[in-house]
Amino acid sequence: MFLLRKRPTAEEPPAPRTPAPAEFDAMYRTHVRFVWRSLRRLGVREAALDDATQEVFVVVHRRFHEFRAGSSERAWLFAIAQRVASDQRRWARRKGNLVALHEDVPGGADTPLDTALTRESSDLVLEFLAQLDEPRRVALILSDLEEMTGREIQEALQINMSTVYYRVTSARKAFVAFLERRKRTADREEKS
Image (tube, one colour):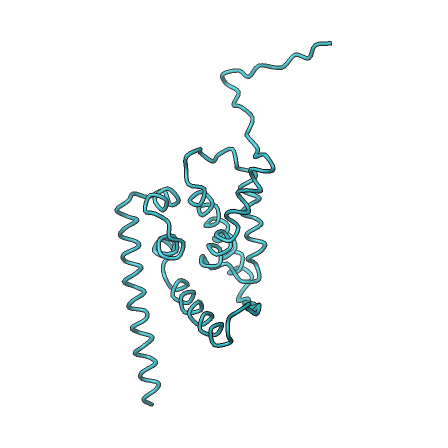
């Protein structure tokens, strides 16, 4: 018995390509920490980070056929993470003010002072990112925290290179001003 395969016609698009399990696993292992950090920096609540990370990779699996060979995986993943984070923040706003959970896992070799300083620095950066407008926040995260190149940022955000440079420079200046305001406030409180 011969099985006849239907030939695709010109009007019929080819079936979407799904990733091989090893291919998907490799992408996951390589980028899961990057996705988690990006979601956190994009304002996803601590309690929802694991779920949001999983959601990003569900979208990656579903839309794997859209990834263009030769493109930056990190840029593509960040674009997906940005959409997921936006949905998460929208959901949190609809549900009201939810208290963030801080799960402090003791570090291996860090002293309590190191842990406290790291946490304080991280909280300071997150506080700044939360008050920064979305376009500059995203550009600063990709540039300074994730150390992406200008081309990767341009690809992730679908903007021209001069806009990338403007947003990063503007965000850096805003961070310096933010730190100066915090220092002045701390100096006034110390004097009183």
